[in-house]
Length: 192
Image: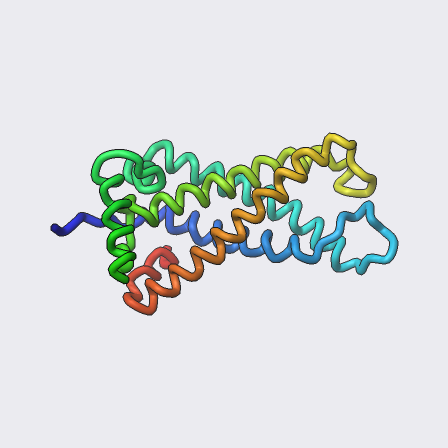
């Protein structure tokens, strides 16, 4: 039985490129950044990374909002990311059986296992963006002084979610590489 696979809309491809760039920068910048209020014994570059992380994070929040706007208005994207009924749900079972037989699911907007994983990744990135947005406004004067103690709550949750985003990032890169080796058509997502 053949299944229909839709291509991604052009605007979604642009958002995907933006997402890929900012999430990659944010993940790697957090590895070596230090808050500006921790002044002693730190390299200035680490403080620069902190500021860059804050501002790129605010831009990432805008991208997340743009993406959720598309999800809200586009039923195909919504069904792909949250494939919990109908043929989209059936595709999850079909994909799992296919993986057991060493077959990768097709690319495109068809729901299934890749769609469900994309949706979970979007939720994790959304949580990080929301918490980062809150943290941004809890840091006085862009980091020249230590924030209030309440700051630790969103920070700990932000750090917790970053583990899931790292897992998603590596899994996404790995699966995209496997798909690209099998069929370069998957790389169309990067052609806005």
